[in-house]
Amino acid sequence: MAVEPDDTLFPDIQEVLMVYLAPLGETDTEPPPTDDGIGIQINRVGGHDDGISDYPRVQITCHHPDPRGASKLARQVRNLMDRIAGEAIVVEDEPKPICIDSCRVDTPPEAEPYENPDARREVAYYALSLQKPWRR
Image 1 (cartoon, helix red, strand yellow):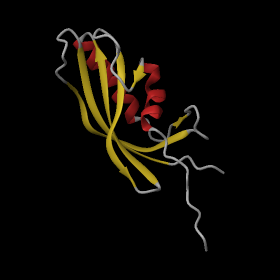
Image 2 (spheres, rainbow, N blue to C red):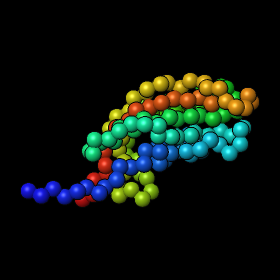
Image 3 (cartoon, rainbow, N blue to C red):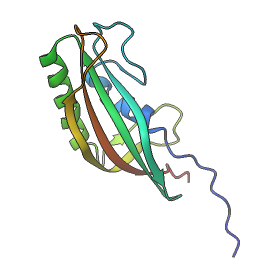
Image 4 (cartoon, helix red, strand yellow):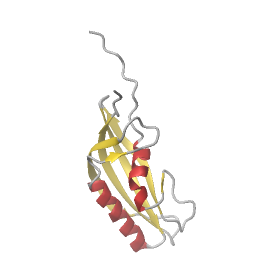
C-alpha cells in the first residue's frame, strides 16, 4: 500500500484567532499604531505538531489607554477563548471552516509594563489544538 504525502497546510492560528476575536475590536499581529489605541494583538509563540494535529501556543495582548479598559478587554477575550472549542471559524482562503479541538489558559490575563506609562496592556497565553482542514 502506497501512502501519498499530505500537502495540506495547518491553518495559520494567528489568522484564525484574528477572525474569531474580531467582534471584540481591532485584531492584528502588531500592536495598535498609536499608544492610545485599543486593539487585540495575537502572536504564535511556540507549540508543535505531530503531522495530524497542531498544538500552537499563542500570546494575546489587549491594548487600551485605560487600565480598567485593558482588563475588561482581556477578560472578554478569555470568555471567548473558553468557548472556542467546537466553533466553526470561517477564514478567507481556507477550504472549509476551521474547528479548534481544545483550548486551555496557560497564563491568565496579567497587566504587563509598557513603554508608554499612559497606555496599558494585559497579556495572556493560551494553548490550543486543531487539525488540518481536510479536503474531500
